[in-house]
Image 1 (cartoon, rainbow, N blue to C red):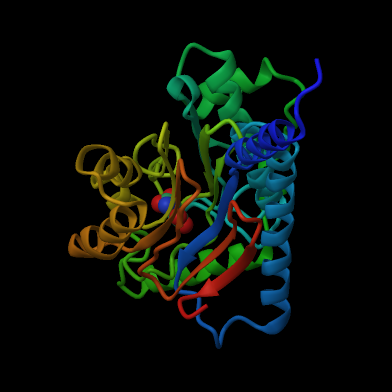
Image 2 (spheres, rainbow, N blue to C red):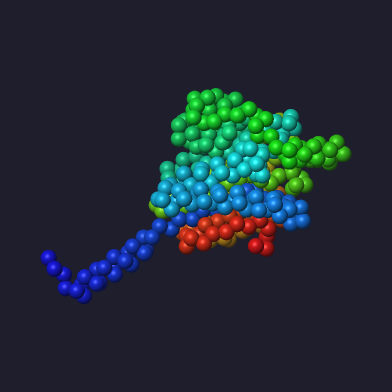
Length: 335
Ligand code: ASP
């Protein structure tokens, strides 16, 4: 059948409009931790290294999204890059606990079927975020900890294992020494009260072309932590959350993020109260957490691809790719 030209044009342009409307709106946000990051104490080389690592993580995550991959694969890809970078407090470069060892925490959540997986206090798994995803997909549980998590990892020989010392770095050892000295000097160093105790936790949140959201967080926790201390990062609803319309990965003084169910609270404010992402994330980070004496920040995005990256500390390592393809990295508040 031959269509009259005007009809053909109309149909073609309608098709074009429909295609534009349906253009995939993907987005990605990442963080490398919030804390007392002073401009003066960050030399040019360190800053370049950090920004390059953030960029590499954005590249890894965005490549997945751009090729039609899932938000889940995107956040895992981005977080693995950050875990491997010794400047961040996750995987290689994780902080030392009070015994001079590393105990790593991670969690991941996917809006599709609201699946989640988490590990706490793991000691020999090179990529805790990969292990968290295995817990989510290949165990009937959400969270495994310590020895049990290590035993579960034994059943997944393709997940690389390393001796605990593999996570060591000189910078983190010095940080532990300083914390011990402060403690010996009578100051409460292990509780994190100085803020300088932490930064460098990593995380990612992604929106894929099918409108699904995933969030992931990985950390060594807080320097000089003891007694098997576990922070917010592996706790679904505190450090990580992803539902049908909102995803969050947090970083900061974990005890306050747990007590305020930060990641879930942000998304619940949108769902129950109709808050915008910016209002929900901004209010929780800038008002609720400080009102209780805590500090830190979050990266968040919603189903429209809006992003919010609020923090109440001097700095937060962060990066983003918006639905329009614009991207960037930043460290301090005035960028
Ligand atoms: N939230 C992490 C914890 O408390 C630390 C961090 O974000 O730097 O374990």
